Image (tube, rainbow, N blue to C red; front, side, top):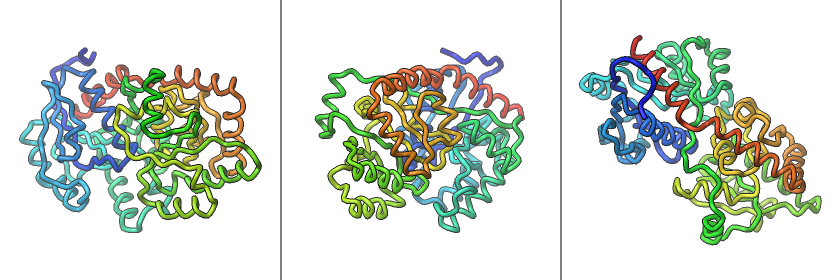
Length: 383
């Protein structure tokens, strides 16, 4: 299926040099977007600049070319230097019409128009989550990018509004490109769910939270709310955490020990892309207490798989989940407890939320979003 845009084919660059599985939702967003382009756009040509880590993101298609760069994505200074020098020469050699940056900023000087995905403005809102040097760098580079990029692609209207209000980005220079669901994200057949449950020794009912362990993901309040339900005598389902336990790891583990929740919390390792729909389909409900999100990709994925959602009443999550979630104030332990209690006790409500989520998730299937994205590339190329 080709796109509906008219005009000569474009040559579009995809800068995937920064991409690592450890970036969590960002990695999933990129993977889904690139896969959707491969499935939905056969008219234009794509040149993906990758490391050995990010090479797997690029599908094998006749209109996709991979350029392997001998860099370690973990080495940020080396990558940034490369992006501002050698990459600019390669982009010219490949005669690209525009270059898509997926790391919320672009190079200082660009040889072709830049199209920049912006996930959030966390560095401007939550300084405690960033070391001082990183926070300063991100703020400077994002501010520069907002001024200079040919086109900005915020992943939600909430992020677009923040870009306009806080950094002065003009709405005319933004196109919202939300998460694009892979077709795999649908309810998994019962036999596969049971096989998955046995493989990872999961209970029949459980709460699920899919999030990295950064402070704004709010694991500590979730654990304290969970403990509160237990001390009140409520038979709360076990809590499964799908997290790599990076920043904030020690405090999470310490809190679990302090509250004596070792037998209630189950940690899952990194799963394959094929296993994630099984995980959501297996869960009795997803609890999503994040304090700040540019999108909240696990909420969309969970809805698509028929997993009922209880989530923070924050702008980005409400934008994506709509009426298909039970909401709570993520700073209020009683609110978190109340949402978990309601969804666990009221099976009719649980089924209603599940059905609403399945319908809501269809808005994030790829085809119409790809058309909007390719139209954005064409706009940028004309600049």
